Image 1: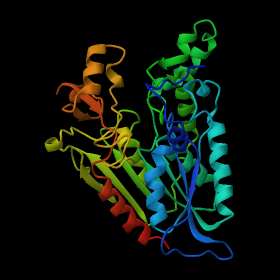
Image 2: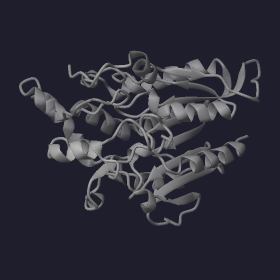
Image 3: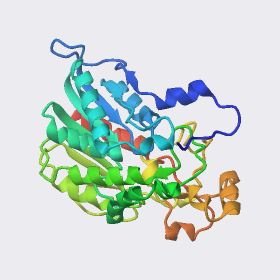
Length: 345
């Protein structure tokens, strides 16, 4: 099993706190349920190779807005990358279903919020569970590259060539996200997208996605929002150009004065003041240089003047590039979410 290695003396309590599931009670004024402690609750689901740490700020947002909050840890996550070698997407779906069942015991109205693969799992659960009253989807993994379907074939000979079981082997120095990625994770993600419903959705939907996303095919989110038939529907679209689509609010992603070239898949749910991934955070994502160029990898991690954005050929032309890990428009996203919540019945 591939294990993560952290430089220096690890802060075990801090690492554990970021990787375990969490629950929050609403702060301030909130509505009580009918025979239950709370009227509204939300289940948060992190993305593939991530951890509940990535959902912490969203959890605090929902807490401030009167929601009972629960966040799940998907099987195979929060430990070591090798634990994804044998997991199935159905295991992830079962964890979400269990989370909903736990939440419904305390709230009248259940909402789901998910990032990337967590968004796909939330959508799948909402389609199968009439108790779900609405969904919040962030960088939703609704469609991925078709070449992912062939990843499962490597399992046939990975026992003979163990390295073939891995898409990449990276330092794994991030305590809250796997950096190494196994082929089974790709296969299960692709199978999950095949299981997603194609029918129209008739519950409230809030979506945030980026045209610059290099992890998922984000244009699928633009098509998805067209299928939502509930009047409470809203999408924020980070991009260079306005798609001019109904119910889609364009946010210009580039901020050259802050050396930000574009948004990124990894950036949406993290605010600039996050201590780990934020503007002055302790983590720098330079993994795109690791295997090919050790000098650039070291320079990227050390530089305070690197460009920020998604890892694309166009952005790499600007020079030293870090993958953007925070959302410079996070405050605006929260404001849009508050307005959306006010529209809920």
